[in-house]
Image (cartoon, rainbow, N blue to C red; front, side):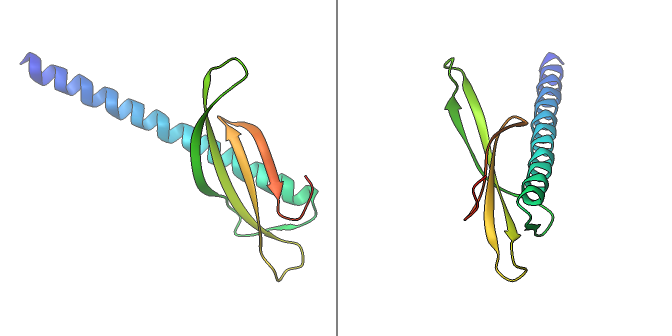
Length: 106
């Protein structure tokens, strides 16, 4: 009986951790979408497809030596309505680390 209870507790903890990771990922994507819209608006270009795409993540260390997870997102935009260009966003949690537009200083 104790093995069943232990298995249940471990499964519940795994689900809770999975849900938290999923929720943090959704929050980061929402932040990236907002940053992409604001960046395109400020650069007077059109944000295409109305969404960002997850491009990857990596671990890095901050100035204090602590590990941080950086997420990178890409998005498409157009300056003339014909040619697509790609921008990028790098987030540490929900904090903006970098944003850029190809061919545009930002």
